[in-house]
Amino acid sequence: MDQARYQAQLDSIRNTSGFVAALDQSGGSTPKALQLYGVEEDAYGSESEMFDLIHGMRARIIECDSFNRDNICAAILFQMTMERDIQGMPTSEFLWQKKQIVPLLKVDRGLEDEADGVQLMKPIPGLAPRLEQAAALSVFGTKMRSVVKHASETGVASIVKQQFEIGKEILGCGLVPIIEPEVDINSPTKARAEAQLKAAIAAELDALDSDMPVMLKLTLPEAPDFYAELIAHPKVAKVVALSGGYSRAEANERLAQNHGMIASFSRALTEGLMHQQSDAEFAAALTDNLESIAAASRT
Image 1 (spheres, rainbow, N blue to C red):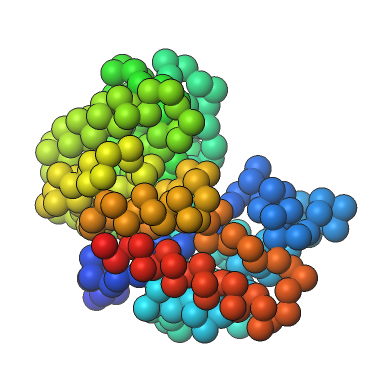
Image 2 (cartoon, helix red, strand yellow; image 1 turned 90 degrees about the vertical axis):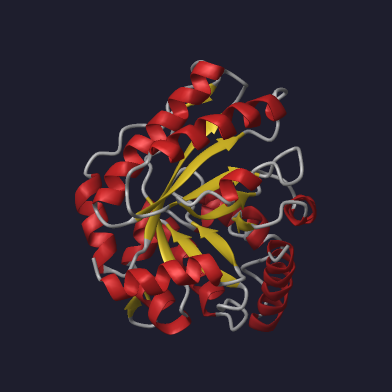
């Protein structure tokens, strides 16, 4: 671990007022992301061409002047994005060295089928060498998503246990994990699931013996300031919110009611951005998105 870089990035995560940009769509979600960007599936003939197009979209976002440390404190990248270049530099290096934005890496490999009200993560083979590669490319931490569909004491306990077990492996490799047990915004038992989740996370945090903190990425809750205890926990560097399918307007409204919680939005971040826009139109739309999300994150 580069201790000086780690400390600078940790300070940035804790103290920068911007939010976390989620630019980590993987193979399964990329076609939809491209379609929202105005690129239909008949525009590419292979997976490689598809990833070229999504990298072009991400590079266009990152290179915009408004994609800066005033609005963004960190960005979550897909593996192929980390490995591809922007202006002749690996994307993660470009983010940190040119923009002072902390790079994070998505490491999960998708979800298991629903069982006991939750979807656990699939196994993550080859995690250690991926973490070593990421650390060498200035990456600070990782993110891994699982999903709570319905309130279930045993299901929620299993999802949190899995998140922290892998999180401890990531901490052991010198990176900071983002623990992300998403609660489905359409769950009929969303509020009850959130109460179960908060209790399970607090217990895992209290038992954590690492000297390094973790981050949490949680669905915007039903009750304002619901996760205040987790935000204040000494083992938590930052709590970030996922929009979970809420529109940018609703996500921002909910976020503003949760003090100390910052955004980590994907769809809300890219809302209204189109491949066909001129550079000026694209920059204006992106700037509006960035500034509105950053403002909601500053509560």
